[in-house]
Amino acid sequence: MDARLPAYLEVQGMIRSVESAGGFATVVHKGERDAGTILILTSERGGNARFWERMPQLDGSRKFTCVREQHSENPQEFSEYLDRRGRQDPDSWLVELEIANPERFIAGGVN
Image 1 (tube, rainbow, N blue to C red):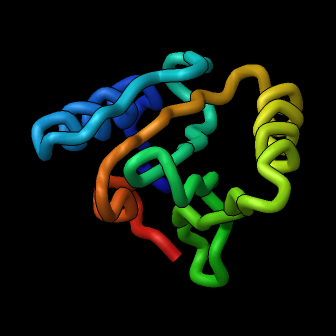
Image 2: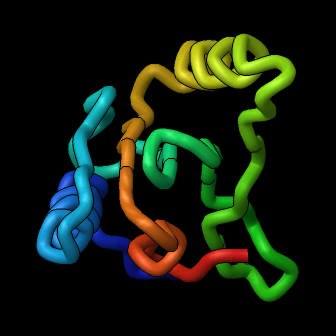
């Protein structure tokens, strides 16, 4: 069985780490306190928006993977995807990180 931090603790740790490095982090949507899925929206200087979600790996682990990137030719598509994903899982957390190299702050590894 995989030991897992409660979602609210993982989110708090991520926010504190980003803020202590001079970035901005906020909870856009608060999910289920202990077992909610954590979804992450990252950007650098207001651009390069990416959406991250934990995905199962072949080795049984669950690492954050970039599942969507915002493209300048159709930014509406990115927003619609975020809205749709939030409706699919109302217990999920959406955390926004605004900092250079945001991947370094995402716990559990990144693919």
